[in-house]
Figure 1 (cartoon, rainbow, N blue to C red):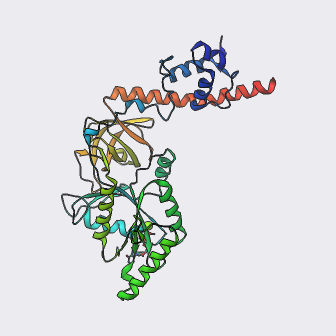
Figure 2 (figure 1 turned 60 degrees about the horizontal axis):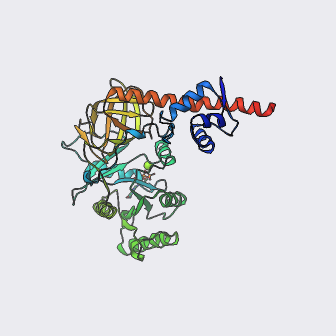
Figure 3 (figure 1 turned 90 degrees about the vertical axis):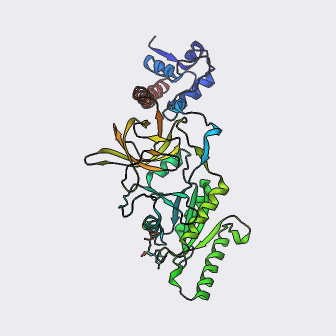
Length: 383
Ligand code: GDP
Ligand code: MG
């Protein structure tokens, strides 16, 4: 027959009807019931989604998990410390960009001096005292981050909440606080623009006022026995910027941030920006979260893949490898990868092609499932 009801299919392939209807819903079919009708092509696609491992209750393949079997399990032996990934949030004009510019200018990790920093969406600094690395993301409001968050991926370890000494807490400060509470990231408060008040007593009083406002907004600050550090800074004069950087490092040590830094682990990461550049083609900034990326690595991402042709840092200098928490700009993508999508290393170009094709088929099925839904709706109306 060219059509089969869900209940009959479940019998044929030895699955509980409830399990099959649930799985079909995951695959993109709507309002699936026992007498939901599937046409032959869909049955084939459904079978494909069971990885041909019927009876073993195999994982249902959906557009979101089609690449999961390519990941490697975490080997605790390979875990090593990684730099914290930090975003700066706060009310408009409170000084986010100024802080990022200051950090870029003064402490960017680079061999040579005087390099022109490029905008690649993220950069690393080396702290002046402890000589440790911190990764700053400078596009946290970007759609890519919303997309990651929707999927439950939060790559930000620490949020630096910027509050201007002059204005204290403003509406977007409260938004940022709400976000921080939901995100699972840790927080540090930077009270900025302290250079605006030269009289020490007056300045201390203003800092005290912001501190009280923070407490009134339920921020568990250190002074009151909580765990949120408050650092008064000026990004204009650089006062206490060292202290802010070292506070981030101290917090990251408490968080005990680790990732597998080994080329035995399958490398993973996220695309944080991508664009077409004249002469090099599709370029993306990838933030590595696991393993080690090398030139020549094969990566898949969304519906495309890449043989890494070149890797460079925020200074445009070419780099040989990128380990966890390192952002790199890479070229070699067949098509443009989308910001916010996950990147996964595979062992060969043919595996990359195979999995991308599989993903496209699964996506196609999810799309066509909607046509089946329409047929079923019609049937229901006629009945
Ligand atoms: P953003 O909207 O949060 O990115 O804020 P900006 O970094 O663009 O800063 C807004 C304004 O405040 C600019 O005119 C900055 O020069 C100024 N500003 C930022 N930080 C400081 C600071 O520490 N001291 C002083 N005096 N001005 C600052
Ligand atoms: Mg800004």
